Amino acid sequence: MNLYKILIAVLLFTIACKSKQTEPTKAVDSSIYYTCSMHPQIMQNKPGKCPICGMELIAITKQIATAPDEIKLSDQQIQLGNIHSDTISKSAIGEKTVLTATLNFDQMNEVSLNAKVMGRIEHLYRKNVGDYISKDEKLYDIYSEDLNNAKQEYLMLLEKQKRIDNAVIDFNELVKSAKNKLLLWGLSEEQIKQLANNKSDPLTSFYSNTSGFITSINVKEGEYIMEGGSLFRISNLSTLWVEAQVYTSQFAHIDKHATATIQIPDLPGKEYKGTISFVNPEINPDTRINLIRISIPNTNGQLRPGMPAYVFVNNAKKSALTLPIDAVLRNTNIAMVWVQTSTNTFKTRMVELGLETDDLIEIKSGLMAGDIVVTQGVYLLNSEYIFKNGVNPMDKHDM
Image 1 (cartoon, helix red, strand yellow):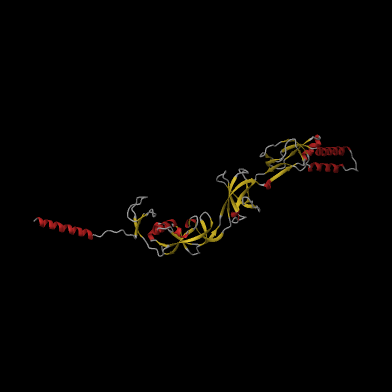
Image 2 (cartoon, one colour):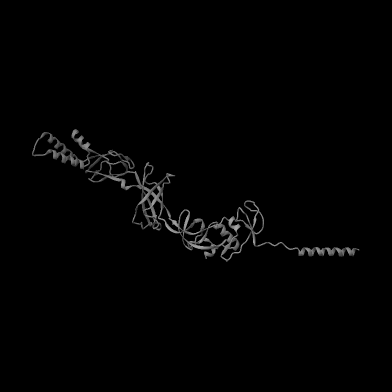
């Protein structure tokens, strides 16, 4: 009886072992991977939850590329990855050049006040560079032998004109000639009138014939000055020069008649417009820098020489193949785009880049008009290629 029970137990154990051996093992399907609908960069080979947002991962069927350097995506992958393509065509593109600059005096509005006669400067009424001078304001007193002699001659002729009535000598012409001499030496009509009434003073005052800021003083009290010698330089700040430095590598791309936008860091939020009025024909051999000049108005007087500035020059536009900047993958050596070769199938292509603006970039070679290029989602497409093939497509082009 006991032997019978043992045989039945052995038989049942054997049947159980065989049933376990014949039970099929659940294999991992290599044609499916799991991703997050909110974060498609998450890709796993088994179900689970997204490590970023915690949502359940969804199954995606892998597609086999039609060629080793291509990748084929499903409609769901393209939708989740927000991948968009567009046909490349020609459009107008122009480079915007940013230059550093400094505000300077407008030398067209700068005058030099020179001595009309030789003499000694007895008194200066303005001694500081930067002082503002109004028109007809007294600048200096001078002692001049030549001028004093001319004044005495004028007074003498006036006296003779009153006392002597001689038809042979025309004192009116002599007085007029002496007066003109005083006018040429810088005296005003009012000064000559006072001279006739109050007799002669050994010192003569001279006045400014313009208004502006003193930019240089070239004489001191007690110094002798020759006729024509420079005493003051006065600049009117109604307009200023913006002088920008241009490197030789930038110079060829700049439109010499372009309209520029000027921004002053010391005056945030304000912009000034002007056109390039002068291009220095000489390049500094040491720095390889050229100079361009733009004249801008100083309407409210806030601008001052010496202020730093930025100049934005919009150069002449040209027709070229262009893409959005985000459509191009770049490293230090190459630039690459993804081109759609057929439905949901994409391939990399190396390109040569040209001008670049805020949102567009010129394609000089590598593409033709009519090619369909991925304009959005290129980084996700690149990541998908690396996940499927284990290699970065840029590394293949970079070899």
